[in-house]
View (cartoon, rainbow, N blue to C red):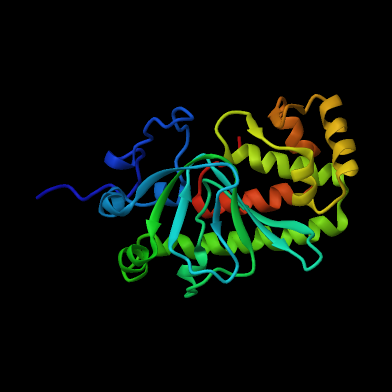
Length: 261
């Protein structure tokens, strides 16, 4: 008799390997896909399309039909809410720890009020909604076992982020946000402008400039020409508010593996 399959997932597998892309080799897998057994990865492989997502690509618009779900590899997406007066604030980020389009799994046909766009360009696996429904939602176990805990962690990120924006200092929030981005990208450098950071954190640009300059003087980051480089990962995490551990710690409990750099 053949030996039973080892349920421990391996990565990369066949067509899900980290192929070269315009930005270079991918360092880390998507944690949802990596949590699947080898046989489940192989079964889903024909339906997954490897795509390169460009800066500011819009993946979902409020009240628009959801046509694909995405599993980021080294790309990072922002979920933002825009008010009637035009002000914008970020309510979540999604990278290699998650899936873009979880509303489909929750039974939604159209996107919610949030807009989802690419903040850090890179690679992702894309799956058509019809295939996601037939090959994931209508199949027992598999990815479904992971998506419930992931959605709970994503809701935790949104809730904790809302509290964080209300009670913690801009300097602490900036360090938390930068370290979360750092955990989701390849390497230590990613594109980011002060104006964009002010939108993400819901504060005026001068406040972001002061906070970023403080982090730079402390040796935590370096920034120039629209890019930020994390120069001291451990100290950046230490300078973040308690929300950093609360958010990222839950993702690590979901996948039962280290996630943070």
